[in-house]
Length: 101
Image 1 (tube, rainbow, N blue to C red):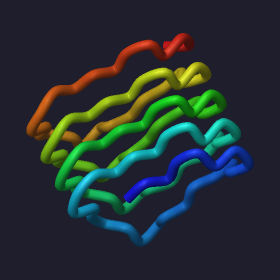
Image 2 (cartoon, rainbow, N blue to C red):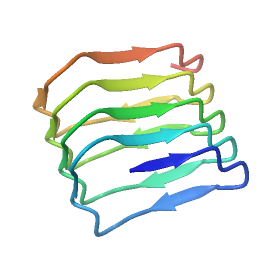
Image 3 (spheres, helix red, strand yellow):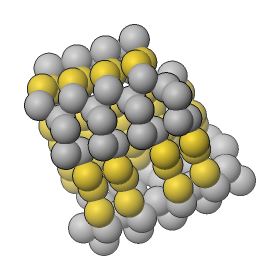
Image 4 (cartoon, rainbow, N blue to C red):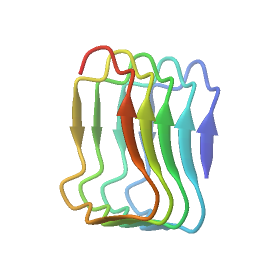
């Protein structure tokens, strides 16, 4: 599932999404300020959230497992990350180059 290069996108709301079989990529959405995926529990592949300059916080409260890597990077306004239920990452966890963290 890719949500990428949407210059005017300000919010993502997928309240009923529970699982992504492969990768979840949210990238290069310059105006994105709000991301709501409250029911998402599992990402089968990689989880990448990057280059979203206005995104101030990431909260994925129900995610327990990511089959691949988790990469959160180059989100300039990012000041808070909550992955409170995450217990398993199949690859690496990388949180880098987020200037406000």
